[in-house]
Image 1 (cartoon, rainbow, N blue to C red):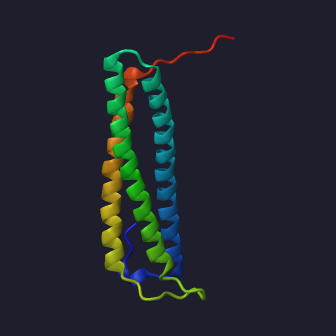
Image 2 (cartoon, rainbow, N blue to C red):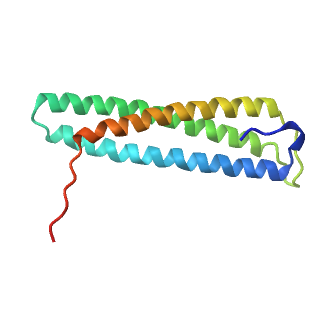
Image 3 (cartoon, one colour):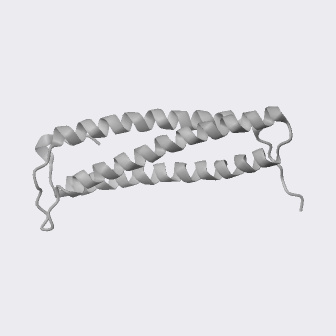
Length: 139
């Protein structure tokens, strides 16, 4: 969220921290999903016999690596923003000096990066559909 200068109080900061925690949890879930795909694709490379299949899977690994690095950077940036907010709160509930403009600028930059990285992630997931086959277990 973008924080207005004239309305900053402890509750506003706490709510913003909750928003950042939600975004952080989403990014962590994407990271977990990528790790699962990494494991499956690595197994696929190990078991593949066709060179074209191996090349396609290696290309997938490269994309996973890029997406993983993007998400890792996003997680680190979210944690930095959270710490920025947490440092503004004193134990008695009053605010330390708060640089609203810096926070808002950093939040907007991060939000735009996350949006771009999520598009990259979902495009990759969509590209994997051509390799998927759903097998229903027989009872």
